Amino acid sequence: MNRRVYIVHGFEGNPHGNWFDWLCAQVKSTGAQAISLTMPNPDKPSTTAWQFTLDQHIGKPDAHTFLVGHSLGCITLLHFLSRQQPQKIGGLLLAA
Image 1 (cartoon, rainbow, N blue to C red):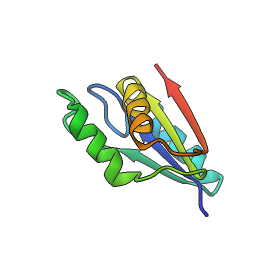
Image 2: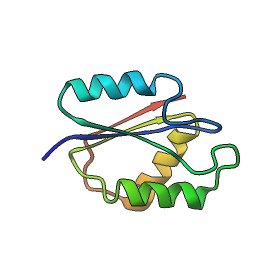
Image 3: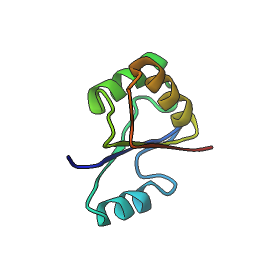
Image 4: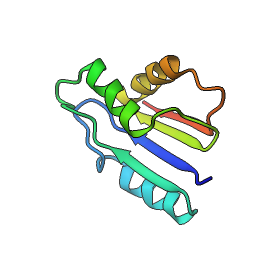
């Protein structure tokens, strides 16, 4: 199965800010899939909307799922994992 790396931006962010495009290029160069998510209303984030977005795009994480969060994306991913309670994920990287 193909490795998938999901990148979640933070408050007032977007999927092309900071180092996200660079990271996507690095991930893709390894043959893995890189997805930098667009989170809804980043200027006025809603926990419910952000969790729904992760559910729709990631679904149930597994050993081939790698998650990268920045800023508010960190707590968003931790909340997501707490709800999903996967048995195993490939990895989690949180950058404040």
